[in-house]
Length: 130
Image (cartoon, rainbow, N blue to C red):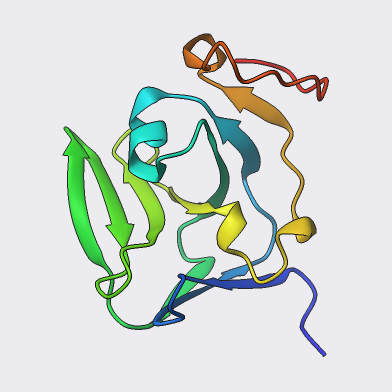
C-alpha cells in the first residue's frame, strides 16, 4: 500500500523516476509558447512541488536551459520532458502531471498564460484563467 501524500511518476522508458511527497504548492495548466514547444502539445499540466519534497531516481536527467533562468530536465534515453525550474520560482520545481503513475491523483485548479492559448483549443472546465 502506498503512503498518503506520496506520488510517483516516470518517463516513457521508465529510466527516470520521481517521487513527490506532501502537499503540492499548486496544480495547473500552462498555455505559454515555451511549454507548448517543449512538449509538442497545446498545453501542459504542471505540479508545483516545494524543493526538498521531491526526489529523482534512476537515470540522471539531462538538462537544457530553454531561456534565461529556466532549466528543463528530460530523460537522456527516451527524451521525455520531466521537470521545469526557474529563478522566478526558486523554492519549487515543476513536474509534469501526465507522468504520474496515477495522474488522476491530482486536479488542476487554474490555467496559466491563458492569453497565449491556441484559438482552436476550447476549454470549458470553469477554472480561472491567469
